[in-house]
Image (cartoon, rainbow, N blue to C red; front, side, top):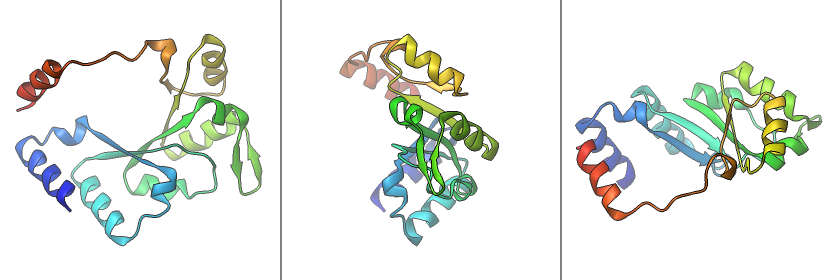
Length: 154
């Protein structure tokens, strides 16, 4: 409740926040959501917020329901995707995972794209977005950068 109160205050101060922020939740956590969590997500979705599910380890989930709740992104680890995801009827190959999620309107983001060989494989599977050290090493952000960003946002 405290988080939602702070988020609501930030939203009232800056309505564009809903278009600039994507909240992500691990697949394991989404499976434990109860009525209050889904209600909060519905309220946030109605304000324009988008969500992502990350740490996706299998395809044994109703992804259509996630779309209806405002989820727009699915994040998978490159190794997990390329090995194929466990699904109710066996293993689902990477290409089928990407096609199925895309047909639902979900954007696939693959993490740990750390070399060109992995990049080429995920592109061949139909992945539109990737993250990893191949695209640049993580950089430390100084405290002043956060202060400047906070001032600009206010």
